[in-house]
Amino acid sequence: MTLSTKTKKVMSDGWTIIETYIPDKGLENEYYYEGKKAPSVKMTDKISEQYAAYTLIDKDLRSVIFWLNKIEELEPEPLDRVKNPDKMNLIKGLFVAALTFYGKCFTSCEGRKVKLERDFIDEEHRETHDRIMKLRHNFAAHSGAENFEEVKVSLALHPSKKSDMKPQLYTELIQPDYIADELEFNALAESLKEKVFDKRTSVGETVFEKIVIPKGKMYWYKKAKANK
Image (tube, rainbow, N blue to C red; front, side):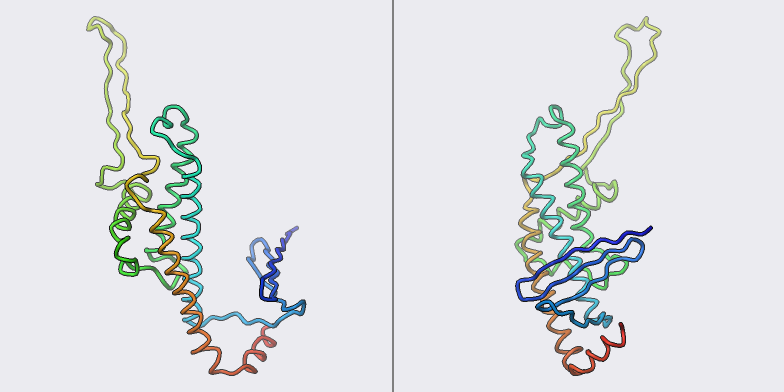
């Protein structure tokens, strides 16, 4: 039996959203205003798709900021890799997640109609962005030419040449758990999130100006009724 889950969100402006998640089908929302169910229409025009894309980018950046704040709360120390490897493995996971989701905002993703470009970033943060993208490409996503990680192999021989003991192969691994001291990653993400939110708001206003208002109120009521 497939079980659905419902979440109720009460907004400050009189609106209430009932989110119903059905496995294998996805999310369906119902909207209420002051307790009365409101008709709704799924918007599929290109400008609304851009609005949706900026919403996804905003969510990715909020995740990046959350993960970076968690790293800060864990207070990593230089010797934690030796003293507390579990803590550093967790930090590495959070940092790689932050790199990956940040990079996703600037790369083409299936289902998204928008990606951010470098010139969208405030000039003061562009050098940090370049460094983050190098980390993303060479550490989180691929093993690149940059020296973010390195492994050497050593053959250890018995101290005595007369010994018949089999030599041992050992690896000397250097792989960062996170790189934060010289980076203003969090400041970059916060700044970018604000700009994305403003852009999303602007695109939403364009939806009203170019799509919703020209067709008139009754068109949308009829469309909502037809889609029931």
